[in-house]
Image 1 (cartoon, rainbow, N blue to C red):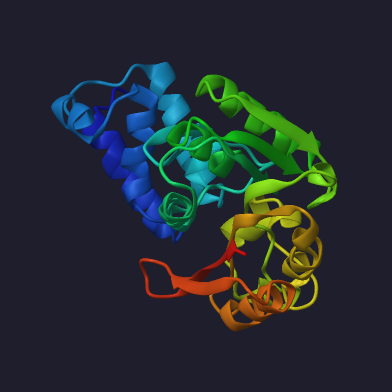
Image 2 (spheres, rainbow, N blue to C red):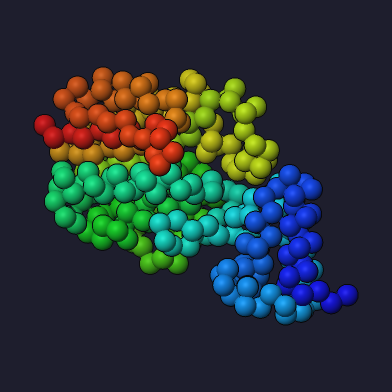
Length: 285
């Protein structure tokens, strides 16, 4: 039976609502299918969908109804005004992480001046959004990105290639791949969810996003403890460390860095939702 875009969207919205999903996903999937935006779909709303497109659309809607995130269905997510490729080997980039980049750039300008040549490392890069965005926003930076997951690094390399960002990718756990060198800026969005918090999380995240990138021991603090311990040997005397944190971890993470860098200026910074989300450590000895 022939269906217009309008009829297909109506069906999909109801179907997703019945399954407890956001009905806006229907329009986003249709936009993806037609490679257009909201306006583009509205202008074609009464067109009949070709049968092959309709089948593809219905399959995508069913996948999302079962819990698969839209970003993994379409294979893309927007971040800092650019389109990144994502799959189930990496976390879906969150808008809060854009704020980490804004905060880092502001503090880099204060510490070093505009677009100076710097050595920057992104630890636990995942899809590469932090490393790639920093390279594109601060072209003079020499950027290195690490991850413990080979599959994640492959995804990040694909993004760097597509977005024309020259990044040195290294496989390994936390600081191991960058040891023995000195860095001006070190950024990280490590796993920080405590295992017992899994019961509060949505099935969409738990069933599809990589647990290696979500969970950490010691109440979610394990990676920060290791970073605070290892970074004094890796960061220059004038340097910046910036990490994303769980909203309950501000004081704990700030204390870890204050102990390791007694002279540094440590800041706990809130995100747009007024939740503690970042810790910055400015070293200027």
